Length: 517
Image (cartoon, rainbow, N blue to C red; front, top):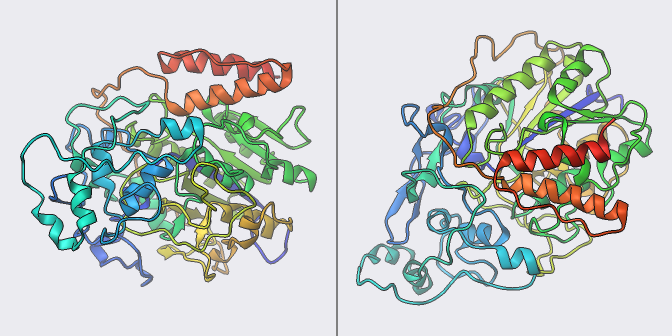
């Protein structure tokens, strides 16, 4: 450990598919987007908007607690792939982007009919299904508002029909409307996440590592690269992981969550049993036991419980369950002997198609791989995601930004571990990433509790989601099948799942076979 830091342990909790604005955009709205310390905060003013397919401006709005669907917003799974993200940000799936379209103004349009990325996922080849320049079948002449953008391309964008049929693993909820994607959670709606963000440090310029969906961003988190992949068609990755990296330097790691079957184990192909001394995996309860029994590893990665019955906060699952899970994590760590020497990082893997008003920077360092599908070189970051830093050495009301010209992204987790424990970088991306060790500015650790008396929210339990196997459950099953294929030399393909319970049963059986005691 480097003596100049107070960090002896790092714990990361990564939730699913939420943008910064969608969860924390109103955090300091009542104080003109400044924290009590006077730090500027890149939040929402309430005037931000996106056009719908008729040219109507849809403004951001606070989600109301008395809405029965409040904790299930935006009531439909938005598009989240590379094509979707570019459409949300720039009005097209790939460069050259249409002139005159304002950045970050495609979220409502995309949400109205999310782009089908199936061909891209299967083939990883150039294919732009987005802009089909045909006239609508009806004669509704409702596009006058496009003129404010001074662009014929924008007029075509309005008049183009939906790019394709909406396809998603998550069934839509009733009453879903295009405006729902502009709904924003208030601090009162998320008392735990917001309480920690105000009570410690919030990062208002932390970006996911690639402008695309879940697995490539989780790969950047664990490995500093997605090996050139932009879609979830690859279920596990062969690049060297931070877990193997720690092992090679005689440091310990732990992976906990998903009721004892964490996906990260099969996601990182270089994690093998028997685990090195001091390394462990298991359920969230196992993590709690490691705190009590004083066996907490150097680096801990926490997962949620996946699927519609879980607490991942993936749209359109129960967001309140995730806030309650976060409270459990915080309480377990704060009541332990590790509290003063641990940095807890709360983040989200990607924006999941949820609205954000900040355009991602373009100065990312490319790891040594390019996308086959779009020849994308990974020099553009993904959309902002909520990230909160928690430690008794952090002053309440901190809005943390790096002093580096390179913004914070998921590889800043790797950079922080490398700084704290004197490790070489895994790739050029994490080598260039800023670390976050200087967020701990206090000379004496705090003894107050910003969440004292805070009660986790609860959702309307009468809202039922149609039984289904979630996308990440299918990906998890696929990663275990890939491991079985490598182990047996025979191609193993997981079965089709009609429900999340069926997927969980397969995952449990395969996990026990390859990772059980």
